[in-house]
Image (cartoon, rainbow over all chains, first blue to last red; front, side, top):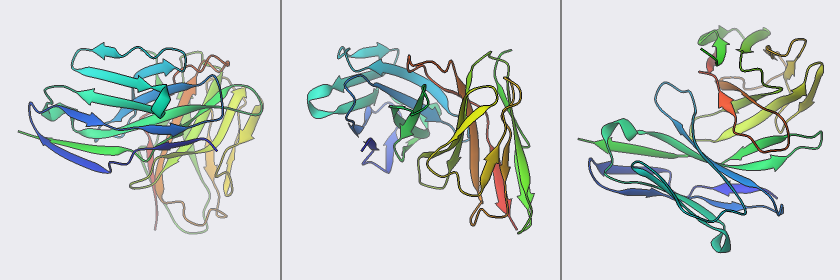
Length: 117
Length: 114
């Protein structure tokens, strides 16, 4: 079965600390995509990154970086020098091929990150 | 500005009533989705639609209904058959092909049953 596990329910850090959010997935598909979304207190999910299963290069975007390791089925997300504005719930998601064509997303339960000043 | 709008932001329902949540997008996306989010939980798929006039049940479709008469619109009706409808409902859209494109989300509707 397709599954996404985010073992960390809540993380609290102080500003400027680095923090890593873990994501482990299970899939039978040979081609799949992984995503990270941010959900601030307003509730709307904000897309952060999409990574396909054939690309294991790490990616960096400003203070954000992602480490994809196919061997361990993990797609971890690191925020460097965290800021109060990073406080949010972060979701990892896995693509799922639908019976009627197209795809949907399977979400983990999310990690709540609290950054204090 | 292109995006997804959902209305209302907050909705209160008495037990036994049907209510309809609105979702509109102007991104010219073919696919649209409805998710339900409960506290401390991830998002669970209720219904999805890949093209106009066609939609499919997701993982938790019981007690819900949808329609897709226009490309831009994908309303969700929460019926009285839904036993525990209090939740946060999110609508999303994507390009809809098999290229695993990211989904874009609306701001959500928080439904409370009184």
